[in-house]
Amino acid sequence: AGDRYEMKTYPVDVLLVKADHVWPSQPWDYHWEQYIDGDLTVVTTPGDHHSMFFPQNAPSLGAAIGPVLDRYDEQ
Image (cartoon, rainbow, N blue to C red):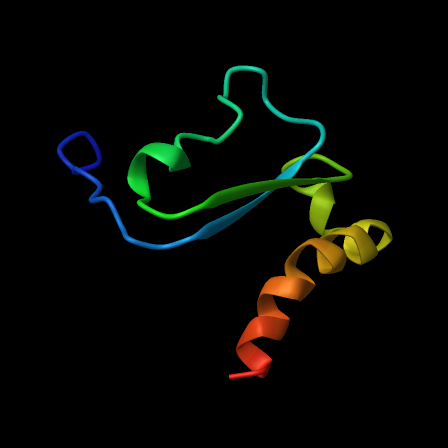
């Protein structure tokens, strides 16, 4: 099923939060740019794929996603 799946393009803005210890085989945008018709913002936080969610990295992660979530609180 995964081989046959074709992802659509979506008319949305995307905030991509990625770890600063990334897998070298991945492109800078993890292929998201080709699937959106909006703005792509890439923010890097400390850690790797798993440790970016650890308590010591929570302030950086929160600072990255906080402004986006705040926009929804104002609606």
